[in-house]
Length: 208
Image (cartoon, rainbow, N blue to C red; front, side, top):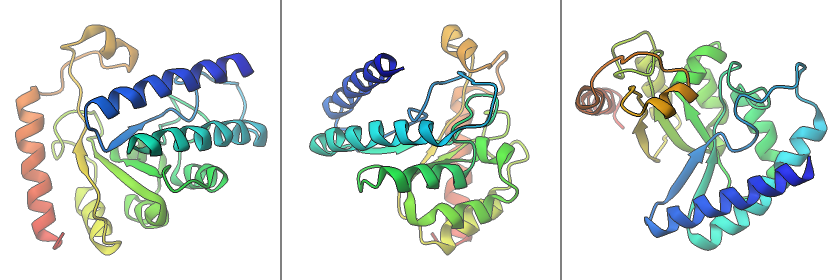
């Protein structure tokens, strides 16, 4: 729907403006398509073209604000256009804009990718941002995401961008409900403290 796409553009412009106000360098998220909106079929070429046209225009707008856009592949339960790095790479090649790069999230990739390391190496030429996130979205390192494989691959591709922790609690019930977080997995301080320890330790281990 052209009207919905136009409204999405205006909303993302507003968010880019707020990122500029905050002096943020990167704006990440699943803004390539509707969140939890499904067509009961696989994605079609026309949908990739619509998304690419919109992201290319948003890339221009964000570039003027000095904000890098890094759309994110989500798991199959949250979107259907981009679940894997292969799909995200395909979309970004259509976008063909230097200010629109890929974001890798270990939570989603842990569901959708066969091997985290292989997926990181595949998307490396387009990679602009990275989320360190556990399988249950709790404290990184407390679940079964293979962070050794993850950090070794990041070191192998010489990734130099941000590594950010993404974890959730039910402190904001409305937001938690929207992403299916029905219980607290860990305390916020624990996510930050132990997540930082994980990143620091893995970085030292693999020479990052």
